Length: 182
Image (tube, rainbow, N blue to C red; front, side, top):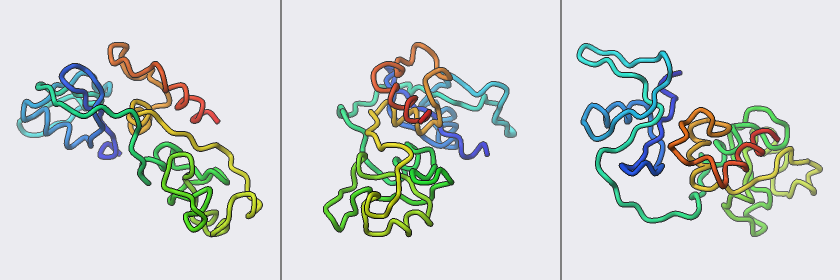
């Protein structure tokens, strides 16, 4: 279970950059490229010459210049994470991504046209719209902001588990909370 944990990576100026695996976060800390800013309470990584709190948030020691991103890039994994691996049609565990408007009918790979779906519902809907297939969406797809995408990747419903100084609570995280609740 601990191998599945995602760690938030902050730039030297505390701006969120991305999420990485626990293993990658530990390597960054061991190579003195990052410091642990927040750890999971009571959990530690131990080895012969290592005793480190399990990092939830690490901050890079050197500033990394990155281009400004106003939008989170679309990905199949991102859609599954956004929808919390729950089928948009029945609520069961989702393993695939479904296009609300099928690609064959002009629908694209966009945040607003894709939802997580279980294999059975994806097969049942086939090459039709939900209306044509007689299926109802339980949740509406939305486009997460880059900050929302990071919080979703960390499996957080809101910013409560992260410290105030992180500053990713404002703006778009309401969409995360309302989408997670709905």
